[in-house]
Length: 358
Image (cartoon, rainbow, N blue to C red; front, side):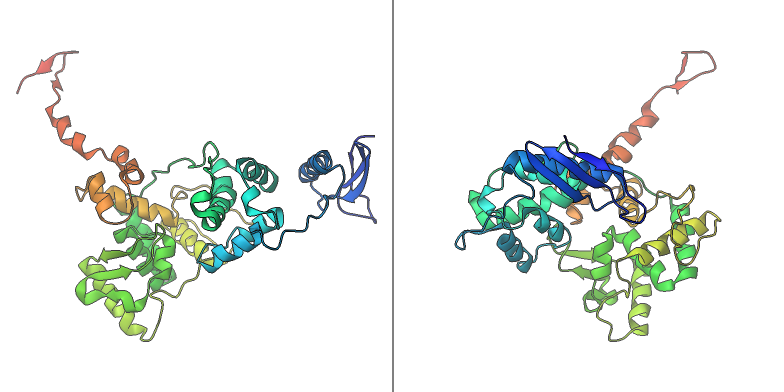
């Protein structure tokens, strides 16, 4: 009989079981989950394994000790400074597969297996990007050309804050933690990413020179930030109050840090927010619910165009982006070159279609 799911049995197992015979191979294993949809994905995975190897589980292939595998390549990549965030998940899937056997089909299959319901941009970030980076680090010029999934760039977000909304959020952030408000102020007036602000060093902060040096950024390029005078004064006082500190700000990435921003945005809208996020609690819909740390970066770019007069080339020149394609999204938000032409349009009179000559 084909493979089927047997529901959880009270007093025996809380998980679905997979039982039956497929292509002559008898199977009776636990799915490891109480969710039917996940158990169904596991059943399909078992069927594919039997089709490929004629048995389940798949036979263990002993690697050639002289042939680099995904395991050895991943270790070398991480030792060279590669981001290890998604590597454990990939290691469980590829294990000791020879690195030169990993092609487009293998990566596509891994994305579907590991993230069956993942969005294309998340699959790209969690599977395609690190796997391709590991292969290229190991094989160099011999690495094949890979294709990213359709929609891998995701939807370009163009959200930004008006000055009065940003001011409300900063005011509420200062009530929660003055250092957190200062951190947001640096993001707002320099357009840096959340991680770049968290990794900034006190030794690289020079209020007297109106400068903050970032030796490493997400795109790999160092960047010198030009500080506003009022922000530099705040940073000077901050450094004097915390001598000997290595990091400019004490915060660490995590749920509590994100919750600080949620508290500030909700308070700016007159809503109460628990100091610590209770289990199962979900934020209600509210006007500034779109504001994340990255929206501060979007706001800086929008303000630079709208109030500072910067064009796309000017945004790239700040070092925030490497190419004009990344910064071009803000040309659509504020098409500054077109704004002055609005005054040249004819003014309509009281009669329909009748223009008034100046």
